[in-house]
View 1 (cartoon, one colour):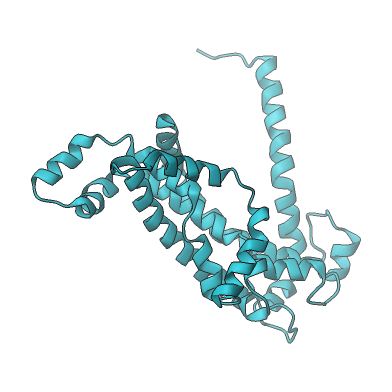
View 2 (cartoon, rainbow, N blue to C red):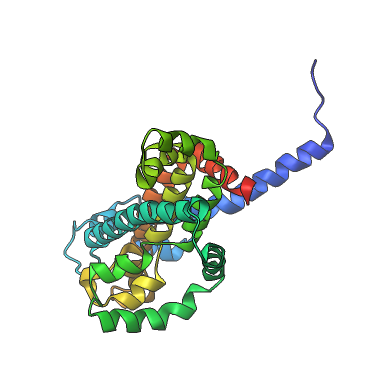
Length: 283
């Protein structure tokens, strides 16, 4: 049978279409502006039709011209190195810590878990000066180690993994121990494969967070050799690197910087939602 569309449903569709325009519109303007000339971008900033269409911004970004204030390949490489290292570290260490808090019985376990929750409530901005002082004291300031080491463990990741491990029956591990498996072997070979949804969730969140990290890299490095996409774009947008307005170039850099995170999220979107729901059920 044919169902008649109600006015309320039509109004809902109109509202959803309007919200789509609000969210997608700026991204379309970004794409269009990245293919404009500088005069066209200044004269028609919100136009979706470049006149003329040009790829000068992308050629500048990838070193096709002689401008020396945008080193996009270096920025992208630094971001990739740091994001991959931090993501790998968080997935490994957060899962270890989450398993310990979920399964191992030791004195102070509940206090330690409450401490993890307390760390999650501390704004990151209040730790910037202590981070800078510690990195200087350790002698690793302005190195890749300084960029990676303080971020290699995340309280939110420990919480996600702990909550997921709580949902796995203990009987599964008891069977492995009967077969002679130790604690780490049980964790690595039996429990961890069952936690794949949570691991994928943690991987996506860790990659997204480390790729978009800004304040930590700002206080842990100096000089152009360790600029990431976020710090490099900040210098570019504020004019610290020179070069005038350059709206097409700025938006081209920002657009390419969003591609890796968007690809990772859309590729694992279903598993991401499944893992988030599984972690929330127990919480």
